Image (cartoon, rainbow, N blue to C red; front, side, top):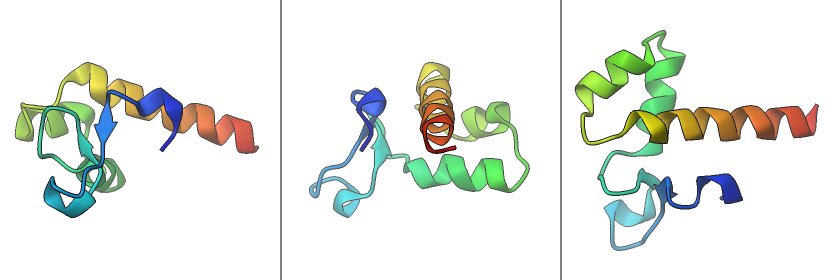
Length: 72
């Protein structure tokens, strides 16, 4: 997992079988990706998953952006 996501995303075999989740929740990272790929907004995601903080979502998006810029 990229360093920028430490403290934001967590993977533990004891929590949802090791699926990466937002820290402090049982909400998988994949749910955010699915929402965004499906054309939903960050607001929609946060409304459905209120345990996830806006700062966590922004950090994930920023980390993804930085990773993409490194590989281009």
